[in-house]
Length: 144
Image 1: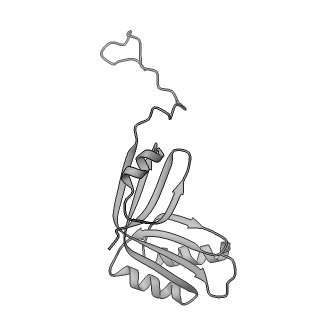
Image 2: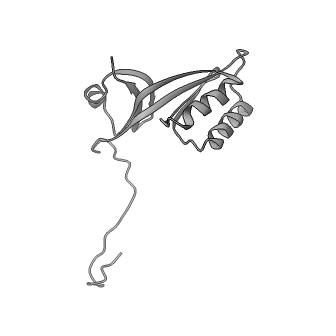
C-alpha cells in the first residue's frame, strides 16, 4: 500500500509469518472466575444433546463461557462470577447433572509461552490446564 502523502514511494508489505519462536509472550488475567464441572448423574457419557442442554441453560442465564474443556465423562467451563446468576445456574444444572464448582479462581492465558515463562507466572493451585502450540491457559486458585 502506498502512502497518501507520497503516492509514488515504495509501500509497506504485510504478510503472514510462521516465525513464532521470536514472539514476545503476552498475558491475559481474568480474576473472579468460577470453574464448574458438570457430570451426568447416571455415569453416562457427555454427548451432543447434553452439551446443547447445558449451553441452553447458560444462554437462559445470559452467562458467557470464557473457557471450556470436554471429556467423555464430564464438561468443565470457566465463567465470570456473578452472585445473582451463578446460584440460579447451579440449581438448574443440578436438576440433571452432578455439579462441582470452585469459586475465587483466575483464568490466565499466555500467548507465545515457554515452560520457563509458565513456571514464573503460574502460582497457586492449578485446577485446569489447556495448551496448544502457541497458547497456554490455566485456571488457578490461590492457596489458602
